[in-house]
Image (cartoon, rainbow, N blue to C red; front, side, top):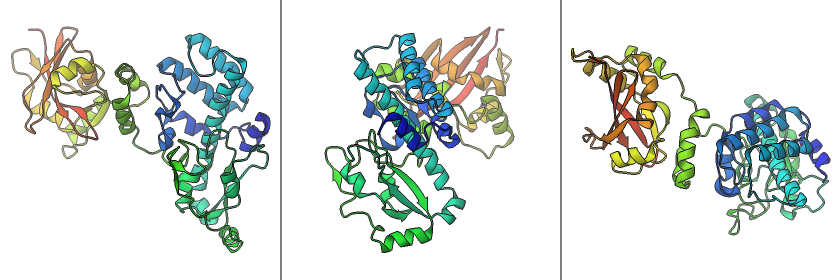
Length: 401
């Protein structure tokens, strides 16, 4: 299938808001290899294999979003790609150096992002409760224009199953690089008619795993998921888990840059004000990741790479009751002071180990001057497999005497 025909078949040439929204909400993650991020993680992560610099990734991401928004096609994306590569001096990427290699690489980036985002947009439309009432069945469609069809994909053509059949969790198109299959929704009457025609059950062994790919037979490596089905996956948890597996240099750079892409649910000032009014609330506020990994790890006595920085609901209340004006140059922390908590830890003038917390966890004491005032924050180290964090215990502010 030619590029122009493929674009037309998938609607790549027509701006599709659900598709654009899917691309825009992605977090840009640095990677060494294309399979550093697999399956459903792509619903929240934008990657380009080998692209590890934040500004480079940002420009590539924007170019892909632009391609979906204006429908200009592959050739326009290739021009953008070349300009971005030149701007950032990116070298060593797979395909660099030959016209054929560059054409292949840009086609892979463009078509994979366009196909998965289009499919994700369609998934969001087709899972709308009102749509499901009228079209509760889904049908697998193999493109007639593919010159060298994958035999398994061809065998699934016309297969019609209820939307909640487990087949769709792993076989929602596209099912590999260059795959032009698609899924359509059909009425109950059409679904029941397909069942009577022998197209209402997937082939025997459809869920057998190919040891070479780790996916069901016929599914390309990393494609065994339904694009768009996992857009609500907890993004911060996904990033936290990924930071642990990154090489240290990339992980530190990403932790420092992550604030651009993962915003707090509310400003720290508003959060502190709310905690002081409603004392029944205890949930923490995420304010970033630990960036000064080496210094904080030394003080904590353990590796804190990938740890959150959080302000628990009790922290502003504790400061109010225990660390107000003492007549010796100490003042009460105002709600606006909590905007500086992340900086106190990650840009500290000094970082040291503190006393063991009431929960038996290590603590870290970080101090930083802002103007003539010294902020001293005590953080509890919360270990574990999930929600690892440096959680603020107290904030003390010393003013000049």
